Amino acid sequence: MLTATQEITGIPDKLFFKIGEVCDLVGVQAHVLRYWESEFPMLQPQKNRAGQRTYRRKDVEMALRIKALLYDEGFTIAGAKKKLQSEGRSTGRFKVVPPGATAADFEPIPPTVPSVQVGQEVQPSGQVNITAIIGSPLSRDALHRLKLMLEDMLTTLNRNVID
Image (cartoon, rainbow, N blue to C red):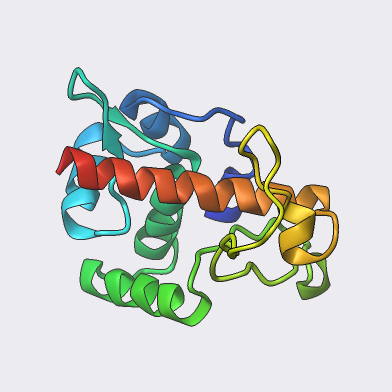
């Protein structure tokens, strides 16, 4: 039997997942996922124009984490909810840690994306020179983290527009 951490590494590299795909990845039925959405505020997939749920990778990871807490670690719904809330407060962001990883493998995720200040360099195309803002070129990891943070912001903004 695979643990939730082992299952996370098997998530396909896609932007969106349908509920059936998530059910297959997590190993639960659709009504279970829908119930978890009602109980866990941190599991809130978007709905497309047709009203179908569209899950992002972070939603799939959260569903796997919820499953691990409930099924593997024996938490109740209330206990799992408290555990996830405390994890969210302590780190400010949930991280997926692959098996065998050490703390040295990860840099802290910055809490916010730097904003452009008056007088900072902006390219003629309207793009911001990131190097001018943070003082050094971004590594591939830093760009990936920045992309994830921007996707999270867009998801939040989209939810606010839909609501």
